[in-house]
Length: 142
Image 1 (cartoon, one colour):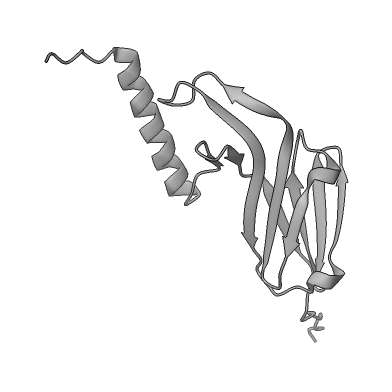
Image 2 (cartoon, rainbow, N blue to C red; image 1 turned 90 degrees about the horizontal axis):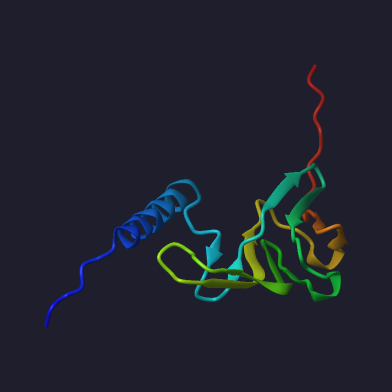
């Protein structure tokens, strides 16, 4: 049984995939997508004030009524299907990839009160205000 020689483009595709995985692992500790489940991890920003956390999430191609949030004292889970699938004919060494939703579990830097959480969605940007359970206070330096 003879083995078919590998094409040069296949070798480069495999090297590119390995480089991308190594880069993601070095700088982020995990990938920002999962091609097996069709999920993308949305870009997020967490800002902390004395009395609350504000989490800003980019959710393009998502409808407000399709966003599902779960808030506990120390984490936030975001799930949102895309209005339409995003397909790539070539994705690394794969011959195609389809993304159908955003998904992220965010470990919060401090405990929050889930019952008082509020969220707004406008122009593809979700803003979530999470009041802290233990509020900070300023101290005057004399």
